[in-house]
Image 1 (cartoon, one colour):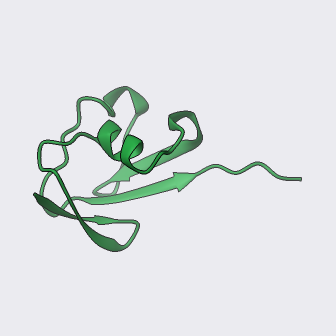
Image 2 (image 1 turned 60 degrees about the vertical axis):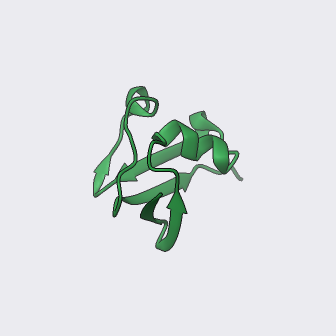
Length: 67
């Protein structure tokens, strides 16, 4: 298990998970989010390849339309 910070909260996740697994776990729509990993915006093309490591700091921002 890896212990990470997700949007300021400490959580545990399987240590062989990738960012895409995290998106699926929380049922997020990939085209409506942006992810910052350890202070750097992560391009969508790396979501499947980037493995989550212990002590990673991940921020997920969802885009919401309105008027």
